[in-house]
Image 1 (cartoon, rainbow, N blue to C red):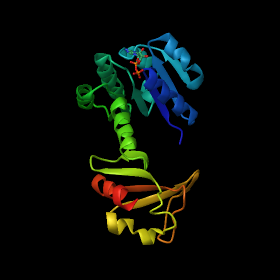
Image 2: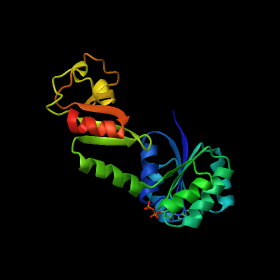
Image 3: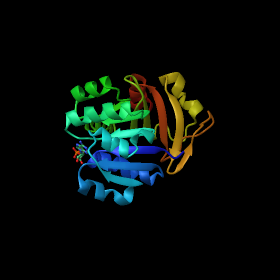
Length: 218
Ligand code: ADP
């Protein structure tokens, strides 16, 4: 479904979000106070405007209140980022996601009503650490403090064996959600499905169980 998203602050993070959302077919209003940043996304947004994100009049005249979703990616200017979050929330935007530079910034943003706070460097750092920790991990999604979804490359230990034989649920308390082979995704694997060379298993579970499966089951 096409979404209406406003992206405020077009540094590296904001401009990537803007370009990708636009490429995915969504309506994107891009805002920055720097004309060069705005020009850079002109061809990669539905509308790109120069405005001060801490000026309520500017936000109102651009119709920010009509958007369902806002991404605020004002870098290091803590005051501007907090003020902008407050105003966008006050204007009635349903989902306001804000980039924070550190934990203190995150806490303030949560207090003023941000619906989600993102610390890109922190989140990417955790992801990279998991990739380094295990070369079997293709990708990693954290669901909560304790639960994750891992994409794990099939190893010799599991290739040519059925899910029934592997009994991943019984042995490791983890659920195989899907099996990927290049672009083909089996989204409802059954017990008879056999793991093939080049498969990627998408597995959900408690982080300790996943670690056990990764160490002993793969
Ligand atoms: P990144 O780390 O994602 O590259 P930056 O700090 O480089 O982030 O980018 C932040 C962007 O936010 C800059 O393009 C800057 O011009 C913009 N910005 C900062 N304050 C305001 C403001 N009050 N109104 C509009 N844009 C702003």
